[in-house]
Amino acid sequence: MNYTSVMEFTLLGIPNTEGLENMLFVLFLAFYLFTLLGNLLIFLTILVSSNLHTPMYFFLGNLSVFDVFFPSVSSPKMMLYLMGQSRTISYQGCACQLFFYHFLGGTECFLYTAMAYDRFVAICHPLRYTVIMNHRVCTGLTLGTWLGGCLHGSILTFLVFKLPFCGPNEVDNFFCDIPVVLPLACADTSLAQTVSFTNVDVVTLTCFFLILTSYGRIVISILKISTSEGRRRAFSTCSAHLISIFLFYGPVMLIYLRPTSSSCLDSVIQVLNNIVTPSLNPLVYTLRNKDVKLALRRVFTQVVHISGM
Image (tube, rainbow, N blue to C red; front, side, top):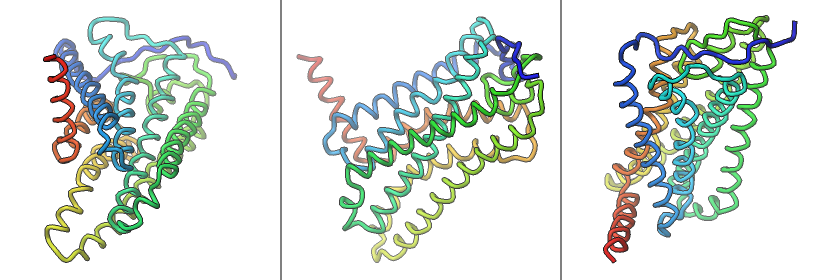
């Protein structure tokens, strides 16, 4: 029967956290505010610093934008029910959460791949870097990441919410995602489950393989550099990106590539992926990047000077 009687879902939240709501609210609010302020600061610094108007920082600015939006998909609603507000979310709101989570997650996945290609060209073809990574190419790659992420999120949302939902309506997580929404459908979900998880796996593994290929070529080129100082400088331009890739792909693979799932473990991993990881990227790129630190210092100096006037 192709109908949906469920008008809203109830988010059960993070398992085994009864009595810890106030502490978790303060902790998650701190992470969320730090994520917003840190990534906005990096984006604005790149925007106003002419010496950072290069392809690498163009992609980093895009990453900062995504890291502002990505935790905003689930964090506000989660913090509201930690404050004692309603745990219910409308049918449309649940569908929007699932769409934007996979839209932004897919976009970020494609963006990391584009950033790996940028580092490959910079290190393996330094003399042709400005020709290959021109403004048109960077803009095209960025638009491709947005469109690819939108297509990815649209396919997954259609596969899940074309199914009828007639009860129960309790989502065993703190936001709506495929593994916890699909079991609530009152129809055969085998096709939707197979296609959706295949879609996620193909996107994730394809991007990860392309990144590994780029860095394999990068490592070979770095090892050919004759001086240790040259090798160190070449590797330092990639280290922040490698750390971000590990922080992003680790939770994704643990959630979607495991043969069996655990609601408690999945919730912990999702908290790391949705809240903690986006807050770490500003630290990773500022602490390990001399150009960003110098640009931030100039911006702060100008702000202080203007305030003093």
